[in-house]
Amino acid sequence: MSRPVFALCVPTLNAGTGWNEWLAALKSQTLQPDYTLVIDSSSTDDTPALARAAGLSVTTIARSDFNHGGTRQWAVEHLGEFETIVFLTQDALLAHPHALSTLLDALHQSPDIGAVYGRQLPHHGATPIEAHARLFNYPAHSALRSLCDRAQFGIKTAFFSNSFAAYRREALNAIGGFRRNLILGEDTVAAGQMLLADWRIGYCAEAQVRHSHHYSLRAEMARYFDIGVLHSREAWMLEQFGHAEGEGLRFIRSEVAYLARHAPWLIPEAGLRTLLKYTGYRLGRSEQRLSLAWKRRLSMQPGYWRDDMTRSA
Image 1: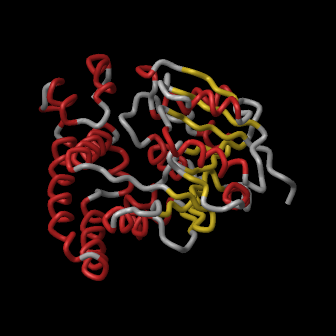
Image 2 (image 1 turned 180 degrees about the vertical axis):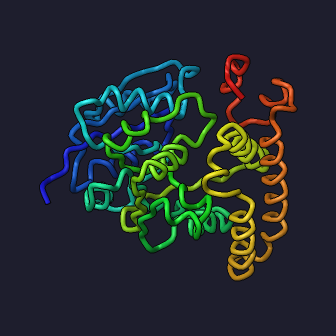
Image 3 (image 1 turned 120 degrees about the vertical axis):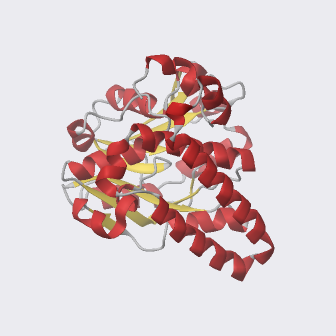
């Protein structure tokens, strides 16, 4: 197989003390990007300076202009000469020197694979609750999924993550690119649209990053409020792939079993988090009944709502 030509895109905002380690992990890759674009949302720390010093191209945008789908679609258009684009987030640390090459090999093993995402391992020192979430959503075995798999996997068929993912431009163009003005989930929406357009979606367990979050209780609820909003406004996803509650129950059973083995004292906290996540999700699904002020208060993305009067519900 010939060496793949690809661009890497990284959205950043105050990447902090881990940025040097991130840059070192990129430099250690056996396969280097032909071009790396950092889209920085007006950081107030030295994130853009360090990126430039490492030889990366940096474009600065206003913090208020960042949008999960819109910013990435701008990058796709800006990187028009590249047929393959990898997206990576500032907090996803490439876990081994072959991470990029392995991900690209998985994408190019067949011309009908539109996109592939890699495995996310918990950061060193992650809590058992964080660790389980990564182990549940990112298993040790790779997979290829097509639309015919939705009967077996339901909403999980379209699961995807832009924290570490490679896209074929042809597939993105076939679906009109990333959707602009989504509250989140531009990756899952794109994956679902690709599946409906008869592309396959890949998961490569051998291409790995370290990426996990320690959400506060409030942030946990806010994130699931936003997921509920996404499912409310993109109702076609549930119609085509099934509802999320069944997958949620499977997660709960897995989490309780995992914590019972590794950290039983955290089961009450996990139960509280489950309650908050479900409450947030149901509020998000019913967001049409809430005032704009309440939506801003409940959301992890309050800036999303500033133009909501011009959005279609």
